[in-house]
Length: 361
Image 1 (cartoon, one colour):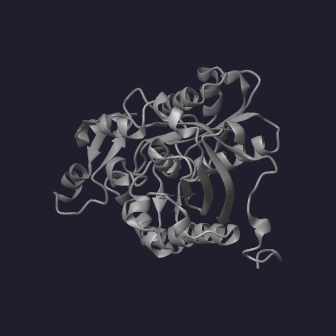
Image 2: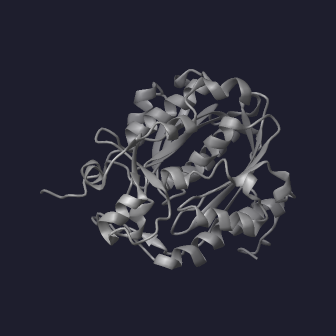
Image 3: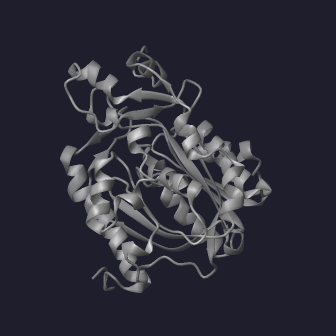
């Protein structure tokens, strides 16, 4: 029971009275890559293993705002709508460049959505992006707006030498939500699972986040991801066999692989959206970035399960059905694989400069 309501009661499913979906989507991944072996060389003399091959690193002129603008422009290119029709621009991130000043207003201004729009920044660790997406679904689904834009974007965070430094990466994705009849993928249902599980945190005025080490797996990541995914499927009457693809939050490669296996998904279903090994964990954009890679190759009728995870802790699960509009829109903007293949390797010294690891004040 949850507050007097059975755990699997259909009333817990988040559905809109007005069907909505994804009208446009876009990814952005910076070109710079720091190999995991380079981090190991600096901190362990090359003796430790690495959880990912390499991670994406934002350049000197890139932050959450600039990357969000690029992803949003890609989403608009696919949707081909007038940006003045967007009634909400929401940016979810752990690494907003300003402590006091919204990222969302700058993004809205840059894409031409101002002034008749709502703007806000969202925070919920790595699920800030899907949190904003759920809000967009509700905004459009209630007919308060025709279009709403949600973004999940982050830059690399992690204390030098900490385990997080191997995976904490830069990048993310943007999703333009609109009515079903205009959508390239319909969002059929959503479900959220949240508890107070302090596996990862950063207090005010502290530069780097802290984490509970192995505690971040159990009871944090796996409890929430598995519960969100299994409960959504139970409530809407689906099984893993009903899905062409599945995408899970990717703090590393092993966690989503294990979660998929425990739920009953196979390697073929998750391989397209599993990008952590090549670009690292882009935090608020992790699950959403994986979904862009899936949409880049999806065909009409394909069904996708997408499950995020945010420390603190919670997961959002989505059931998505691809429509026949997907084929004409896939090629209107750079694909996620285009960004992955566009890479420039850097060493630890350059990474230190790009990410401001040396404090000179």
